[in-house]
Amino acid sequence: MAWVFAVKDVTGRRIHLSAERWAHISRKHPDVVPYLEEIPQILRCSLQRREVSSRKVYYAAYFKHRPFPEKFLVVIGKYLNDHGFILTAYFALRLP
Image (cartoon, rainbow, N blue to C red; front, side, top):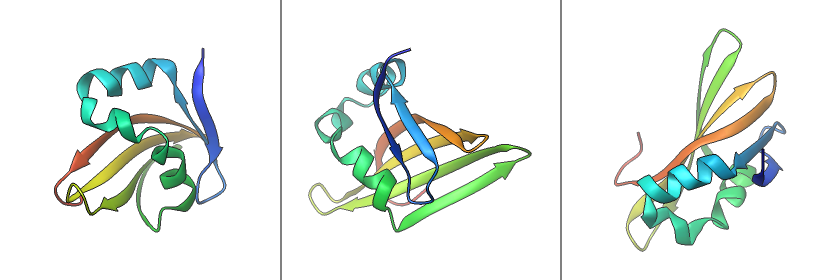
């Protein structure tokens, strides 16, 4: 499977964005497409992060406030055995 990118997140865990997930994000949230280059930065440096665990699976949400447009860029990741992949990315008016 092809990856768009892979980075270590702010906690040091590996996370990647697959071409299939990027196609999904591009189709469902086209307003995020111009911000693809910001997504790895958000994962590496996000000071605002929320995490939920369910047995050995962890879900993490990373946020970056965007002053223009006045929204938050939200990136949702799923981790299993300390390796993650991005599920989706979208803009929100307030934090989820």
